Length: 493
Length: 96
Image (tube, rainbow over all chains, first blue to last red; front, side):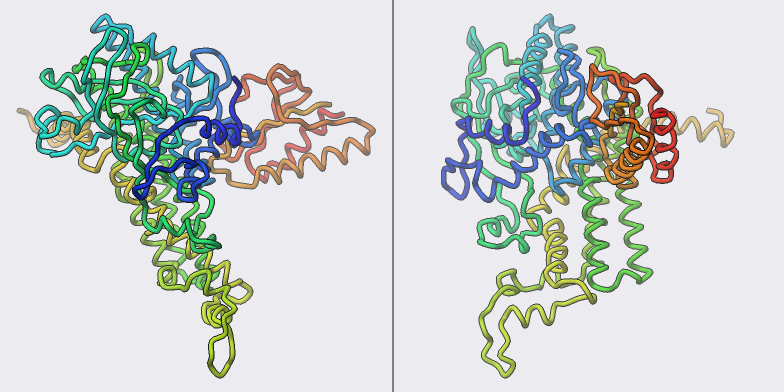
């Protein structure tokens, strides 16, 4: 099958029997649900741009498995150039959606699973790598979106998987059959899970021998029997249910999505099982996925940052403050921070290397530095955007007020809309509505629905800050640095 | 003359690639019309041999992959608006 168009992707979702719950209700037509649809539009963009001659160079690649043209989101990185193009593609998509476009978790899972299954087979004599290649060929040939799912609910963080009061706090094997396995548990915070055709499940952390039932990796269709999702709500999400609220939404077209994905005894046939109790490779899979995903943030958040910087500059124009030197300096600072993140994404890609399986891995130290910066810089960028925008971004009346023709019974006889437009006008020649639109856009990213993706996801997605610091400590090679200092300082011991 | 047009992916272009390409195209069409030549611009496709390949890149990195395309002449690159005149000149020479 050729690459899907965006419309074909949306239609393909309708054919799935994905079970979705939200606000305590089962949502049957989730594809057209106003809260969910913006997140589908983001994934749709990954298909649309692959068809666009102006962007296909980043959005597509040649499959190392089949030689066919595929969407880059299903590609195994074959070079450092591929790793760099991944980051560039993510920046592009961030620019086009100002949101999380969700499809990178699958790409990062494919690449980490490909190399880990290869090394697992070498150590254990298993056949996971060939199984996985067949599975990925199916994904590539059908241009599927796959949720690479790692994060378990984890329960008591002070206890290991098997020591939890409820053993379901981590996804585990509850039954091994001749034809497959039965799994139980859940994956939390799953980006784009509902919008995915398939789920590719990985362990969330290293596993000890005594907990080996938690060392499990597998793929299932999103509508598998026993699998369902509970939608994660976002700040200001019900604004999407309001009529004629496109100004108030800030970003009417696009948005992110997270859900709890529950496995209530789901059967997985053998050809879709890629780890089954090989606990000694769980840590490798986690570390590689996390490394790729920490690289990803050096692209996607930069793209969203590009839009936010543009919005802040527009807000300054519309407020009539664009000539102030401190405004110019803040825009420079925002750009500096944003491009620093991009530098990290490009650097860890340029320093990548081939795995034993042949696909390329990022430089782990630089990828962790990348993500560590992402836990901080977007917060400063958005703080500066709020500074430039002014308090009106959170105090202005609603779109309904600006458009109201209700007369206020005072001397002037003006409508609510006329009053609102009179007092919230900005620079000469700028419509009040355009000023409201850009301020609402900034509000959406700063503390509305898109803050999930730009702020908290920057903090905790692909691992919380401390997870990167642990990796930086492991990779930082302090001992060698001490020797450097000793040599220069003339210390002999 | 048939010109295959290839864009880079456009992650962070430093100028408006599409409008720059449109300027090149309109100047070349005018030039060809005056000289009585035919010139066709089309999105570069694999398996086609072009008289010229115009590669429109957003920055000096010029990361567009062109190994899969065939051209009878060396590719003409644009990566900066200041290079627009040179790109037009190079293509004009090929038209002649």
